[in-house]
Length: 279
Length: 176
Image (tube, rainbow over all chains, first blue to last red; front, side, top):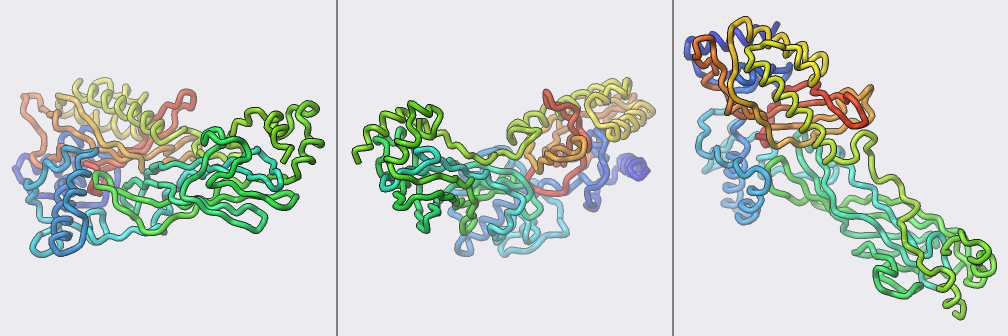
């Protein structure tokens, strides 16, 4: 009923040639395709041409006042997905009730919205974005020779998630920045890289690697890996921006048994137990 | 140390499978965002095309939308097609959309309702709406491009087919 009434009001508006921008109302009920095509969606008119204009004006005024992104960064990033987005620049004459003055520019931008150049996003704002859980492996797989290096490696890569950031659609890109192992024997190790298998490193087995660890005692150990992700975000159609700090994401823990080389050979000889670990 | 060659011989090629892996995905319905987007694009394109077709036919055959929309949305659209027909209106030209981005994926929703929500930019710049005398009835203030928040219901899982469940005008910047 409400939509019917709205349709009639707009049609009368057309007949009388009244063209004033209707007040922006909260988006609510569905707007039928016929309404969209005729321009009868009451909440749709006069509120949409802001994004590109506001963005560039905001950044320009920001860098002009000291600080802010270098001009080159904006120009490059704006071409990536919405090349036609800036085509509206200069055509917007709608006076928005949310207009704020950022001398010497007039910027149609609500504080705290994506076009606000002083908006600060922190890791705690990323609650809607779950990075992929990293995984780790080791070799020999599941067992450890006391006194010889055991090689650990992680599988984690940069990836992008979509979702709502501060109420606006955004993408967040997670990039592995550091890897921290707790080897379960009371020692820890860190690496800027995730490491790789001996084969991938073209090293003989039981070689030392950047991510290897040598156990000195027998026993069962639980090896924990934490990957520190750095993060960047971008609101739809805007350039990537950094977020301070890192996000620690634990990987799958591995349980492994450490023994001497002789124990391993006698107890788990491959000819007798071909499916044993390492065979 | 003498054990080394023996060990190496015993384990010729321990291909390092990153075993013990916890599941790295969280998607029972969609394997990835890309797959979800592809399904959404297909569903919404089909919905738009059929809706355009009905409006070009002056609102005739309105029930054709049922294969593309949820029961509730189909009812709303059919009602609107009825008004179009009663007024003797018809459309020309096709609707377009762009910039579809995922807002949320709800993989554990009841019966697949609202399994996926996206933002998109609806583009009706190619569309005109005419009365029986051929006069355009398009509002002079019609925005050619309008951001929408569109949610989908799961129609089937194998293969994944979606129905458009709702399409609401979205009041944010940055989509169009």
